[in-house]
Length: 322
Image (cartoon, rainbow, N blue to C red):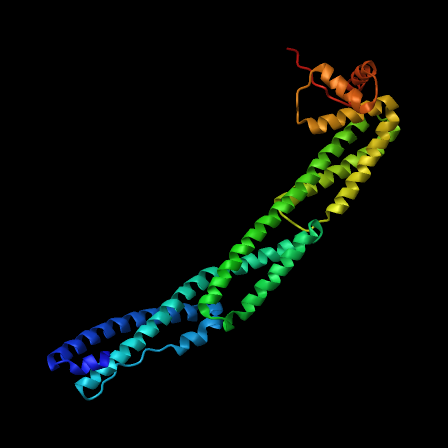
């Protein structure tokens, strides 16, 4: 239809059309040259982009304007030339956006991959399920990176952007689980240290050496955990649990040898109450009744035993008089 209308134009109208079409073509050529220059300069200066988009960039070119003999033929050729320029501009715009995304996202993806590979080593013993999830994600990420050259440019850029977001979410999940694991172990260290201190307070001199060695080992474990909290590194929570259990068993044994059976029962009930009470304030009768129920010892005996345990430094029932 446009060609029919074109052929029906007067010479003056045809001249106006040619001038207008030529002007539009000139603007589109300038825009195409700008985009093509942007794409080629970015691709040539970035080895990763050159590997992915080098062939695509080299295949794009701007054809010369048509210069046939007759005015009518000029009009038709300009019309076809404009359509070609429109298609080229769309391709260049898409490619420019993809180059911009890839140039920004690829380095972030590389950094993320390095971090997740380190986390995979760290989480092997900390959380085997998360270690497996990291391994699966890294395998998928590597497949996508290897297959990028064969993907449509825009689709590849979008896929990388989605993977970057998913990977960052996985990294946050892994970090939270790691910190939780280290935090629980540090809490366990505090409980064992408290028990060990009580055992040292009531032990005979000839029994103290082994307990003091346990305290040294406990301090080493605690320092190691603080270091792990600052700088994540591979470690085995089961091994730490086993070491803490060994020290705890030693302290419990020495403590049970140093106190009477009734005192041991009250001490255990008091310790459980203190561990779960979150620093709650108790009235004296509430405390005595609660320990009596937990230990099966009479109220009177609980009261006397609390006094003895406090005097020995095994418990610290703080008193507030109001």
